[in-house]
Image: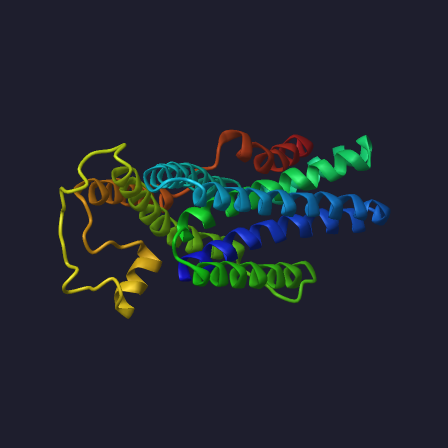
Length: 284
């Protein structure tokens, strides 16, 4: 529930900010009549995301045990790749997100309402599909509590995004994405280990009986602290060596890279230095 709340909050706020930028740009540019196209694109993206989540659930429930474990493990690895890419993309591009979206909206306005709806669909759909995939991978088998956490996170994200749009809430987005990004890396590491265990149970990978440790007596899976460790870190009290090695091999390098200072490229630094160069030329 806690990990899915974090995913819903992080991804939901990202999508809410995208919609807020789209709407604000159209309103300030005098194109309120194009807003229905944006909402149509957003609605289509939400429906597509829900359809993906529903399709994953239906597919997994219609498979045999081994096939279901293999399907779940594969989808977990796909989710790890997508969400890891999103985390590091936001780390590099968050400060330029507004300008990029506004540029795409400006081009779409010229092309027409259909292009504007497609822009909204692609912008929100990417976040929605990632959310659906990762929520399914992280919450698979966790019952209703996983859904409650995800919905709570998404609702809070929508409210926060609306307040940011109305300038009623001043949120340090850089700090927010840094904190949630680091927390998500921990969650993703757990999903990776969980997915590999599914593949081991399906017989696709070996080592299912090669345990790195077995602390089920000290940390019963049914205990409240065992449930918390499972929900937040995907901790398994009887983890295999493959799970432990994969968890550490992902978590440690990912954290080091995530907290490494972001270097501005020469292309990004050029505009900042241009005014100073122009003033020097003018003074001559």
